[in-house]
Length: 90
Image (cartoon, rainbow, N blue to C red):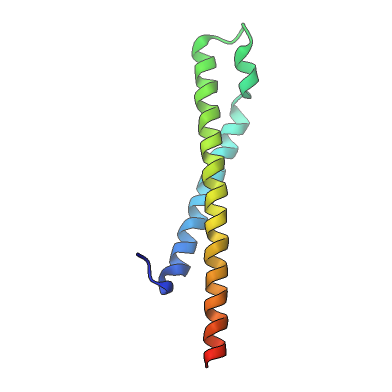
């Protein structure tokens, strides 16, 4: 279990992970056709499978980015509240 003083480091790690996921997500979106394209008959089964797998990766990465953003907000709020409480106690 992390201690409250670890929050700044955990926040930095979570933000770095979110940036990495977002970068990978952006790269997938740039190079990969969207899922509905996989139904076209001129797309080989291999390419259709690749599109489907990449679509799954994009959705999983988006979910991870959303979760990381949420926990970053939570950690930032806890850090802010802890600092406020410490100021009031002093």
